[in-house]
Amino acid sequence: MVTAATPAHGELWHYLPTIAGREKPSSLGGDRVLIVSRTAANAILPTVLAVPVELTPKMPGLAVPFSDADPLPGLSAVVYRITPVYRPWLQDRIGVVSESTLRQVVGALVGLVAPDTVISPER
Image (cartoon, rainbow, N blue to C red):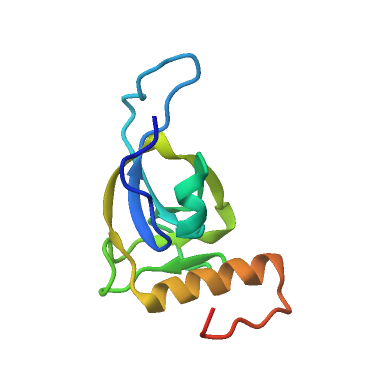
């Protein structure tokens, strides 16, 4: 069973992973993630790529802080912990980060895997 709405690039979601061997989600509470995979891919794959959203110390290049223009200001996208998230685990959409924050997140991700690559604003 896949979530009704296709998670889009730049959206924040609560997710609740299931515990192995159980059909129902755990009762530990949901986590928050920022969807970083492309919306078109998210529509056809059973998983999305996401980064956790947490309260973190300043970690330039590893975590991107959310501004007042974003949902959940004061928290950060922890880009070095990119992970696949099974779509049925996504519970509810929180909102969408600003274009500025999304550009910083994508730039930080590229910096981790291809440090000599330059991202143009059109991408």
